[in-house]
Image (cartoon, one colour):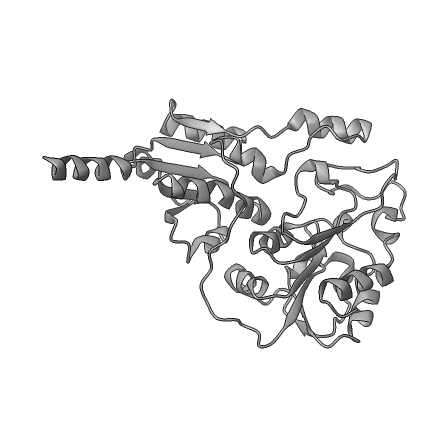
Length: 318
């Protein structure tokens, strides 16, 4: 009798099935791993709906049993799963409607703080004190941090720092990577540049010294490169969240966007470089608009020598 009860309890625990919906972008998908961590501890069987190539993020993640690809998976396949929980962490009309069709009584969406972010944009004051992953966590009352699980040996031998000079929008790119690159030639550690080639924008013709892997890696290879780095340096972009999820010490530049939008790094050790008290900051929600001043002061005024000094400090080279 006791054995039967134990078996039944085991089955009940593993009947719980959750679907997480986050179609993109890279950084947003990374940040949802805080929710994955919590649901896994609660014995949920976790499924994930996203777009290519973000499915690569979960290739080695034992916490996620199934990954569905948007526009490839059939609605009938999702309906068959009979989810006891659906978390819409994208929260657009498409994903909201889909979640309600699949399970109208077991679906939740996160609070995007749209009003607070708009007020910040208008009044240039902080109306939100939560990171994006903390907003995701609110859907299930969790306090976990994002955590990545990627298997594999280091792709690059020895100690190195990772630098990401790319961003989806050119307005988010630090203006002095060329000068910083020259300064970094003087330190006894490898430099590895990563990112997406089309996101180099005005830096596309600059020849970075060190190991230049921009546009030459898959997402999974990029994850492994960041995982074994001694330090990350880069823009407010998705790759910075990879560094935080691996708890890599990070130096991140914020220009047209601000920390209260929710994308502040969360490594144990990090430094954010930004120009405070600029009356035009923030100028857009995602840094998608060109600079109204035409001088990109929010990123141009950050002196590379100060950044270099902080890099030396983080690497204990001072």
